[in-house]
Length: 135
Image (cartoon, rainbow, N blue to C red; front, side, top):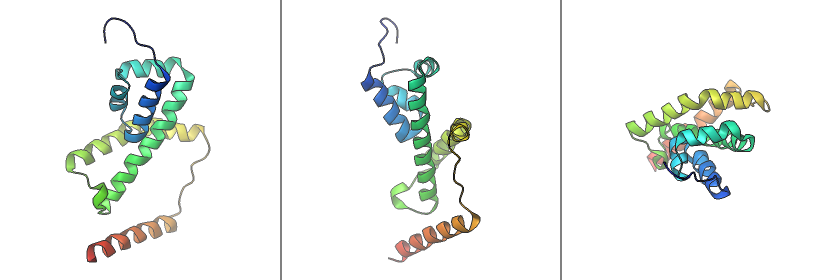
């Protein structure tokens, strides 16, 4: 972006934050704000408010990507992903895992489900898929 430097208006910050929360993808969020990823990382380093918005949006986006992968694995037609999308989603989770994990470690404790709770949830999801398949 040579030439005159464009400031970060509230609208540009919101566009970045909202896209990051939707996609967990910094490059896409930067493009939505008309910025480069390096410009976004630089603002994150010098602006604590922006850094906090980033942290929260990234956690939301991470959860959305995880949810879609789970729904795809359970056969949810609305969440169907092709091989490339699945690989991209897994790469996003891998790339941001450390940052999202540190955010949880610094904040309130993350509630973890017991083995019984996860087994029950998985069985419920599988029963719903089976019901949809049978019609």
